[in-house]
Amino acid sequence: MLYAVGFLVHENRGKLISESRRIRNLAQLTTVVWVVCSIGGAFVELGNLLGGGFLDSFNTSALSSFLFSTSIGRDFVFQILMGAGVLALVVRAKKVGAIYFALAGTMLALLIPLFQSHAASAGNHGLAIGALIFHVGAVSLWVGGVIGVAAISPRERSESLPRFSALALWAAIIVGISGVLSAWTRLNFLVGWHSRYGFLVLLKAVLFLILVVIGSRHRSHIAAKLSGSRQVFQLLINESLVMVVAVGIGGWLSTTNPPVSPSEILSARDPSIAITGIKMPAAPTLGRIFSAYSPDGTMLGFLLLITALYIYGVIVLTRRGDKWPVGRTVSFAIAVSLVDFATSGGVGVYAHFAFSYHMLGHMILGMIAPIGFVLSAPITLALRTLPQGRTPEERGIRGVLISIIHSRYSMIITNPVIALGLFDGSLFLLYMTPLFGKLMQSHSGHLLMDIHFLLAGYLFFYVIVGIDPNPRKIPHIVRIIVLFAAMSIHAFFSIALLSTTTLLDGGYFASLFRPWNTNLLADQHTGGSIGWMMGEIPILVALIATFIQWMRDDSREAKRIDRAADRAAAMGEEDELTKYNKYLATLAKGDQEHPD
Image (cartoon, rainbow, N blue to C red; front, side):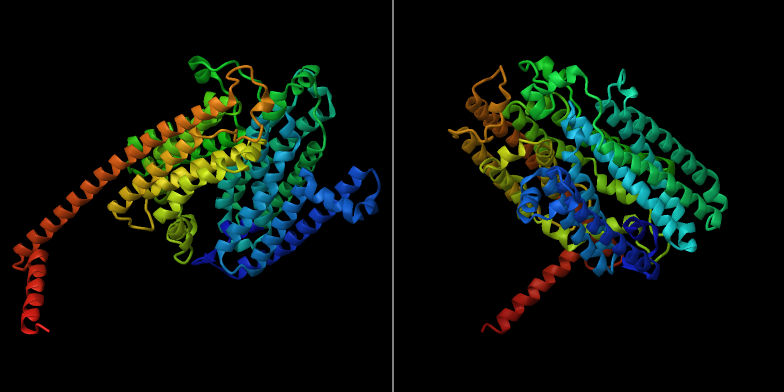
């Protein structure tokens, strides 16, 4: 429902129209049902854990311990709170922006608990969790889109079908790929097909193929010839029914343990696999660092998605007859490769086992890769290729992006001081507090750190050397001062790290019992040296780039003044400099006539 309000139904300059408000009211009802089911699910889960009936879960002390002392209970609390927040947003929503926040909250409530699912205990849980997250996310948008299209009026439906068709195509691709990867990581393909889990996987695959066939018919024939007719509505209902069955089987799969082979049982006893999901690698060498690879499914899926979108944008421009600089595409490709190397490649693998490699990955994600993304100008590409509104009053996706760029929030975070605080200040908050040790204990903690490093670095370099549209016009001298400040703060942090006498990881690296590089404190000091060396060079490069941009801007301004003077001379008028000199002379004459 929220997807339908935000992306399918017409809006008037960001405000909800009557049809949007009607669907919003339906979304309120479904959100209430979601919250009630989450509350009921918490009681049912507690009753199962206690081994009694449903009424046994109404024990206050047991309920409190379950909700706040177990990971499953905290997931229920998170879902209930997010559901209540989404409900509050939807009830008060008068603009599409509130619906976007509500949709984002709903997706977070669905996806965050997946980090505690069966996939989290799989041998390669990085790939398993990532595949499951993208699978569930794509299915949710696909199913929600079908239900939303069926719920809106026939007139709106006929104009919304092309938009939904595009979403359904992308969702189907993601669902298919992530489903195969999820089954591959959790199912023994030699003997697993004889189990209940294997049968459910096959059944779900058949239903997925049926949905693809229905979607293909809808896209190629029905939508083109029967838009708005009852046959389209019937097709949507049939598709919804098949989806409900597929989602039900998916829920059954989530509660069914996949068959486990004896080798997997032995592997689970390895502390490195139990903690990180990765087998302890051999001592690092240059060859092993460049050859090792253990895919982080969440980050890898994100990189594949943004790469597909970037390539699609370049193709759209090329078909239109416009050109996109090759250097920007190359810059984007380098940035994507660096992020993959730091999260799934050799650096990402060894970052789970040694602080020095963790810091190496941090520097790549926070200092080097963001420069590549900034120079690839993704916002400019999006503004040139995103679709506009279907009517003059509708903003469309492009208009939404423009409103975000010029929003009050963007004005706040693009303040150089704020960007510097997120970029360098977060270093002390992360590493000089127990937070680092807690985040290192889980895959979600690793992912959260990686995302923070990447986004904080992108924001900082976007503010300093960005070529995309910026809501603030920051003077070059201010940028240079901020860069010198960043360099000083980063150097101070590295010195503080080199001076540490205790470990910062809360016992994480010691629990892995790695046989190489056993001096953990020395390895931590090595990480400080890496941070100092790799942190200063990108900032120095940004400083040089800022000087070059400053000189180019001055040159362009001088040429503009010269052209204005030439035009004024050709028309027999005074140029800007002459006018300004006369103005100064007038002020001086006034001061002489009225000395006091």
